[in-house]
Length: 178
Image (tube, rainbow, N blue to C red; front, side):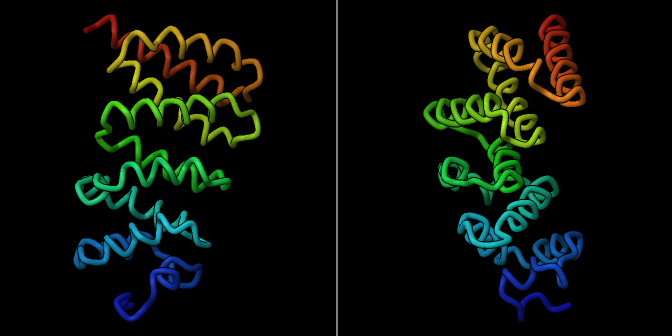
């Protein structure tokens, strides 16, 4: 399929959506990455799919094209209400190099998402991943993160509780080894 003849919304719609082909297309046509970034930040219907594609693209090709939009992606999370869109956006921001102000703002957002019992477990899980990553950089935060987890763990499903417990255990083991 010649994606160059289609609008981004058509590329990511159901009938044309094949993420491997789209990522290959972006690899061969890097000028389209900016169009995907713009669409993923637009908040339009199916923009979450563009965000999902960009996350997978960045795993293969790096984050350099996404880095200048760190603040835009953080702001997108604050105004978004769709769990899957939030999850995919967190995954992108989690890859970016954030300055101290961005880190503080994103930390607060992730902490709020972790406390929110109405959020899908997958959103809370990726938010927690960022909190642990931040604790590596700012060890003084680890007690706060562990305390929050101890307060909310009884309100989590068994699967997410076990997943987050394992992440905490792995985090503590890594800290002891270093």
